[in-house]
Each structure stands twice: as C-alpha cells, then as structure tokens.
Image 1 (cartoon, helix red, strand yellow):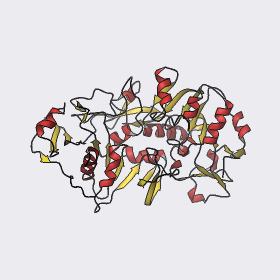
Image 2: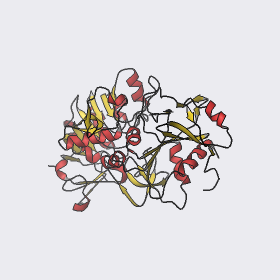
Image 3: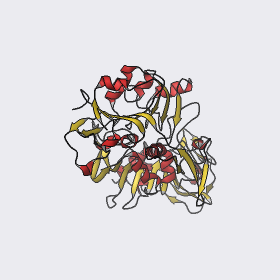
Length: 217
Length: 217
C-alpha cells in the first residue's frame, strides 16, 4: 500500500454505519474506496449533493466539490449551497476528513493560506471543521522531513480546537483535553521514529499497531 | 415580473462600478452566455460575488482576465492563478469568505435580514474587524448580509412564467443569488412550457429577465 492508501484505509475504519460524511480533496477522497461492505455511509459534497457516488469521466452536469465529473446514488438529492451548509454548520455531518498544512496538539488546523506564497482560500473548510461532529485530518506525517504536527500552528488557522483525530502514514493520534495521544503506529516505524518526526508533545500510554492495513477492498 | 430579453437589452442593464453576483460552483451552473455579454459590454470596475474565482478561460475568471474587475468576494481562488497574481500586485481586491458564510450572507440579504451569527471563522483571520456576539453562553461572529446590483443566474430550466428549477448540481448559489439583487437575469439552459408547481425552486417574482436566443436549447 502507498502512504496515501494506508491513511485512507485506516480512516475508513472510523466511519460508522449510517454516517453522513464529507470528504475533502486529495487523500480524503480516497477514503471512499475503503468503506467496509457491511457499512452504509452517505457522502455529502458541499457544492450540493447528498448521496455522492463515484467519479464519472466526461460528466459535466454533476460535479463534486473539486469540480470533477461525478454521480449521485439512488435516494440522493441535489441541494442549494445554503441547505448544503445547513448540513455542515448545523451539526448534521457525522464525520469530515480534511487535509492539513499544519495541525497541532490543541486540535487547531491550518490549511488555507501560506501568507506571501499561496492563497487558495478556505472554500468550505472553515465551515466543515467548525460544524462537523467529528473532524479527522488525513495528512503525510511530515512535509519532506519538516514536521506538520506541531505544538502550535504557525500558519493562519482554519479553525481552533476542532480536530479530533490525526491519521498519517506513520501513526494515529487523538486530540483530547489532556493533549495529543499516540494511539497506533504503523509496523514500519517505531514509537521513537514517530516522536522524532513530530514536533507536538505526544502522550504515550498504550500504543497499538496501526489497524486497517490488510490489502482487502 | 419577468420578461424575456435579448443580448442587446441585457447589455443595456450594465454599468461601470456595478456589483454582480454570478451563480455556479467552479463554473458548474455559471451562465457563460451572460459572461460573454458582460465581456462584450466592456463595463469596468466591477465587484464580482461568486463561490470561487473560476478559471482563466471559464466563468467569472474571464472577467478578471479581461481587466473588468475591481474586487472579488469569493470563498476560493485556487483554480485561477491570475487572481492571486493581481492580488499580490495590489491590482485586484480579494475578500475571501468561508463558503457557508458566503451562502448565508446572501440568503440573509434576500430575506431582509441584517446579517447572521456564525461560529465559522472564530479565532481566525476571518474574525478581524468583526463584532463578536455572545448568545446563550456561546460566541459567534456577526457576518453582515450581502446583496448586489445584479444577479446572473445559470444552470436553470425556465418556464413561460419565469419560474426556475435547476439542472443537477448547477443549483448551488443560483437560487440564493436570485433573492439578493436589485435585478435578476437568468440565462436558462432550456425553456419549457410549464414547470410543475411542486418542483419550482425559484418562483417567478424573484426573476426579472430571462435571456433568450442562442444561449438556450
């Protein structure tokens, strides 16, 4: 499995039967490929789909939130942007999975601007991080060796204190009031490797091998 | 009340310095024929309100490339590098608004409300210069309602009364913008005799003009 597949497969285990889920662009999108067959999960796309299906080449009338041709599943609906964000901000989304430029041990996320360099804008990310019941960050553990999981984000925030779980190719970490707890480590790495690649202080109690690594699905 | 107009009459509605709302999400549901006519008119110093900056060759991005825009109010500019460049050269003013906040600000204006209270953007750059209001022990940002001079509505199927419904994901911001502008112009993809009353999304009193001609099927 590639790093991205490892992250996506592990996050899929966090989804529960019946959940309404919004996946961000990039690694988060891959999570849909690993939803176990015995669970029914409904995907939302913030441009206005409840019941988002797979990608469809050359489709121009139905697009996903990345503007790519997509499909809608039976039972799904098309909605306007206010209704879409009523789902997101009103607490009706069970889980959102998003990428990160930086994420910190207090659960704050930076993902929309590198001042002076790159300003893509926040799109729906601020609403999703603030409004979803559970926020999972899918990210590479470092940016070419430079830690992305920090004591405190240095880039402008997307939202403060909203992240619940961070999943990387190396580890699974949970944010709680006590701090950032290391829950699982990929068998290719040691706990020491993870500590070295992380700027945040990690709480280490019982650390398990990372789940979801079989090549099934 | 709606009336059917041609290209010439639409161009006569346009003026330098206008604020224009344009429907669509990454150009899905954007009225490209109306954009063509705004380019043809060559009106200047426009304020454009749209979900995103479109692409250099598609959607509102074309107005930016054609140097007709003074300011954009959008949630995302990542797909149009020209906007980032002009912004850093201080030739274009860019107001980035979280997508759900943008939708609700427009909806609020159309509903005669002064603004909305939201937690999205708290403790981020979005908070700067805004009032924080506490309600039942929770903090919210006051985001002011947002209206404009003219709305350009796309992705619609119109009937002979001027009622609109929308094609698949092309709905997005279109029905919200149709409530929030002094003049509302729709470029429908198709004009049918009558839309079933249960299926009308934008009732005809919201619609002032419907563009007819080569732009419809």
